[in-house]
Image (cartoon, rainbow, N blue to C red; front, side, top):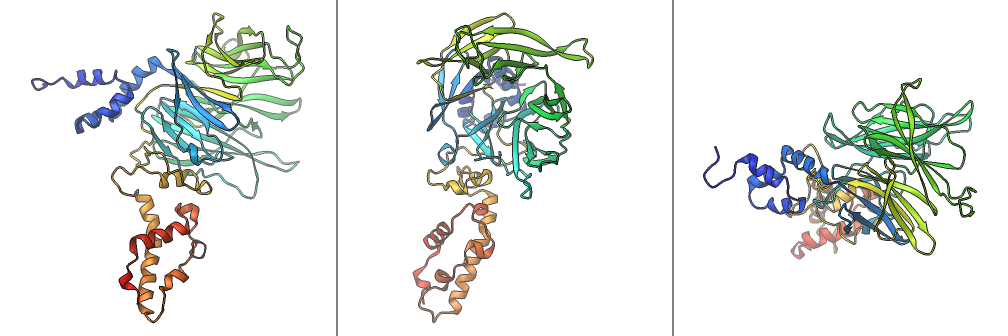
Length: 483
């Protein structure tokens, strides 16, 4: 029974679960019981269930060739810019792999999806994932596809990386796959039982009904066959889903619509397709199909839901809350305009989104307290990295070590262990110095073993030799030791 003057635990939980993440983050400092409650798995799930009723979506767009902005478009038509983690240290703009339950997965590598970050925008936390395991220097990388989704049965968030290696003219493509588990915080190589096929590079897996989906193709007897590659996040098995035939010059985009897998067909801009205005290269229609139960030979088929006619060039960029198709229209002399179209009732309306003339993609989003690192791993970063970090050193592990949370003033355990060997070498040098007191200068200044000689890779330790020297001289130099 609750003490006099205090609320019952159930009532307190119900009240707090209605608050935004920003307020809950502040309340964590009120008391340890508050902090324990807010960070408990039960409360995080309860808060997520409420937040999911008010889900929104956000855009990644480029305003100009040299700048990138992440912007929100909320259900109440409010727009807000988001500060992207590590943006100042990257050699290219981050790519959004996916968004699920408030966690956003970013690809921060320069190529081939070699570095990932899990980011909770509402909590202003991110975590750099360990490096993927698949790497074959004997075969050049050909194409890499990625996806991010939630395994409901195991309560686990997973990043999927599918690698297609280059092959000789008479060889079949070699495809390998690996999965990162949010709970175990590590990668596992799995069997990619999809045969000799190629998954279109640059696309992200679309999450529908507990599975990730990509568009793929393979060479058959009758020519190039196109299909959907589906990956079950629970069983971690691949399968192929046939898609309707469509003529050359037609683009296809996979989407999720009201819990079903959907396809949007539209003409490519570079194809000589004449619109009602007679201008070549204008896509003035979009056809929408959904994967549904029917009496087909395989028990399933595609059903045409609806189509939309456009007065100018346009193409789908995403789905808003699985209820509406977001279409980007290119207006001559006016930049880009966005409309929200519901294929089920043909209702559409304009969206007041800032200009995104260069590039744009849309992802669903919901505020949540889901931590960026599961399984009790202390890999959370709450501060932006130093602006002086070396881009050449930047990878998924170095970001973690250079920019780890320093609220208690201590280095993370993993970094402390990796610094132990250089400082042990320093101690040995000092001992050697005492044995050579007839020397006019400290021996380690001229014979300090470099990283290459010792087999210590600078990328691995995330520290430049010059920084090691500065740290050693600044913290350990004692003039009284000079002979």
